[in-house]
Length: 306
Image (cartoon, rainbow, N blue to C red; front, side, top):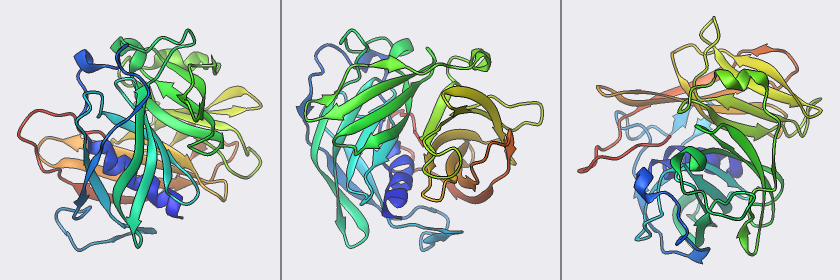
């Protein structure tokens, strides 16, 4: 459960780093290197009820506000952690990746250490410099660990899912791409592939699942795809409140944890986690946990990622 908790921490707190502008997208100067990251504890998840730590089946264990002098730091949109919730790999919507370890005081995250950062690269080995190519949104571990393994990264704008390896030399260039379904052509440029996960058990163990950030069907539900034996099948997940999908993770029992969000200027960010059984059915409902969270608005304009 520590890994699942770390995932939620990362997507809701670590993910709220300053986003990079298009001018600061990963460039040829972004070599694989160690960076310094400072961490400040996030006091509470629910600003209205700061003492609240239990959200349905989830327990809030803490979060971190992260800063770094690196000009390529920020815009974090996807995260995977190991089974112990320590080793991690993250990707940015400006075309960067970051790896390191999470330090804990008891069960609360307190710092990041041994952090390295580099550019996500195309098959040619070139850094992704244009926003259309570099808008990485979702990340999932296919095999191994965040230090040494195989991962998938999904991108929007230029919609695609790339295969990569991670090792002592960092993230490899793209090794190839997953076949996308014809229905993916319906996605808008900046509302495309946002969440990917691999099912960990059950009849579809090892299968890839992906959801668009916003591609409602006629019922207003989320649209995604389940790759069965390598072929994508369209699926739908109930959406009871005009939410967008922001990330997903496979659970040990074969279920799927989906993170959703809804933003209103007057109310801040409203988030939810839904868990559903992973079956071959084309439509699934989910049991959900909801909470409201109004970020402490910064002094300068930022993009809040969830």
